[in-house]
Amino acid sequence: MLDGLKNNLRDAIKKIVKSSGIDEELIKELSKNVQRALLQSDVNVRLVLEITKQIEIRSLNETPPPGLSRKDHIVKILYDELAKLLGKESDFDFKSGKQNKLIMLGIQGSGKTTVTAKLAKFLTKQGYSVGVIGADTYRPGALVQLRTMCEKSNVEVYGEPNNKNSPDIVKNGLKYFESLPLDVILIDTAGRHKEEKDLLSEMEQINKVAEPDLAILVIDGTIGQQCFNQAEAFHKTIPVGGIIITKLDSSAKGGGAIAASAATGAQIMYIGTGERIDDLEKFSPTRFVGRLLGMGDIQAVLDLAKRLENEGDDVRLKRISSGKMNMDDFFYQLEEVTKVGSLKGFLDNMPGLSGMVKDDQLDQMEGRVSKWRFIIQSMTKEEKADPDLMNSSRIKRISRGSGWPEHEVKELLKNYKNSKSMMKASKGRQMQGTLRRMGF
Ligand code: GDP
Image (cartoon, rainbow, N blue to C red):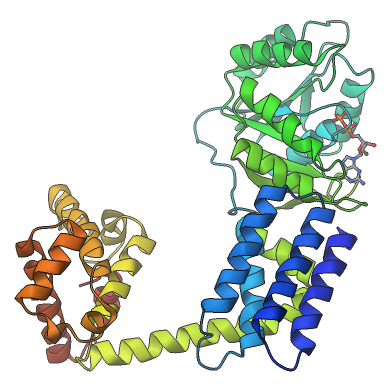
C-alpha cells in the first residue's frame, strides 16, 4: 500500500537513525525529505509546508523526555505530525429508533457501488439492519452489480431498472422501506452525467427528497490532486460529512485522499483495500501512519515514549500525594478534567456522586475551571513551580495578563493551597484518583 510514500518516509527515518549526532542541518534535511515524499504522493503543497515546518520547529526546540533519545523523539514527532495531518478517528453516530439515511456520493469509477455493498455487509455484521437503494440510473449494470454483491449478505436492495428518474426512485425506495425495522438505509447514486452540473443538480434533488443524515464522499485513492476539486464540487452541493477512500491496496499515491479531506473538512472514516466485499477497513490515522513508517520499527519508540509519559505521571502523583503539589500539577489536573469531558458526565458516572451535585453547581465548577486555566497560563514557569513566590505585584501582573480580576487570582491560589493541604492530610491515598481527575 502506498509503496512510494512508504519507502521515501522510511529512507528519511533511516538517515536520522543512522546519523552519529543530530544537528540543525540533519533536521532540515529530514524536513526536506519528508516534504519530497509527501509532494510525490500528491499531498497538497500548503499542507506539506505546514506539517514539515511543524516537524522542524518541534525537532529543533523540544527537549526529549528523560530516557528517550533525541533520535527517537524526532521519529515520534514525525509520527505524531503525520497522524495529525490525517485527522481524527471518526465513526458513524447512528440514532436508535429511526432509519438513518446515508447518501453515497462520488464520480463514476470511484468505487462507490462496491463501497455501498461493502458497507452494507460491514454494518450488518455489526448488528444493524440495513437496506440499500440503488439510484445510479446512469451507469448500465450498477443495479445488478449492487444486487449481486448485497445478495450474499442478505441485504435487500430497492431498485427500478426501467426508471431513469433517480430522485423518484429514492422517494419510492424510502417509502418501500418505511415500514421495515431498518437502522440504516444506504443510497447509491450516479457518478456521471453528460455534464458535471447535471450530476450535481441530480444530487441536489436526491438530497431534497432523501434528507440524509450523512453524506459520504467516495474517493478513488489513485487519482491524486484532482480529488480536491471533486470533493469541493460535491461538498458545495451537499455538505460532506465523511469520506471513504478506495483502492488503497493498489498503486495509490494516497495524497489525494488527504486533499479531499482538507477540501471538505470531513474525516476519512473507512478505506477500501481490495475488490472483495470484505476489503473495507475502519480508518485509523495512527495505524495508517504506523503502517507507512513500519509499525514494527516505530512501535518500540512509541512504547518507550508512552512508558516515560506514565512514569512522568507516577512522579507527579507521588509529588501530589506527598503534599508537594506545585501549580503545574494543579494545572495538569485541570487539563485532566477537560479530557474527561464535561464534569457532569464524569460525576454522573462516579458511584456515590451521581445526582448529588446540581446542574447549576456543575456549570459553576466548569466555569471556574476554564477561568483558572487562563490565570495559570499567565503565570511564569517559576511561579508555577513555586506558588509561594506569589506577592501582590505578581498577582496584579497575572490579573492583567489573564484578563481576570485580582480577587479571582487570589481565589485560585486559595483553592490551590486548600487542595494541597487536603492532599497532605489524607496522604492523597483514597482521594487521589477522584481529585486527580476533578482537578481539585
Ligand atoms: P462506481 O462507478 O463508483 O460505482 O465504481 P465501482 O464500485 O463499480 O468500482 C469501480 C472499479 O473499482 C471496480 O472494478 C471495482 O472492483 C474497483 N474497486 C472498488 N473498490 C476497490 C478497492 O478498494 N480496491 C481495488 N483494487 N479495486 C476497487
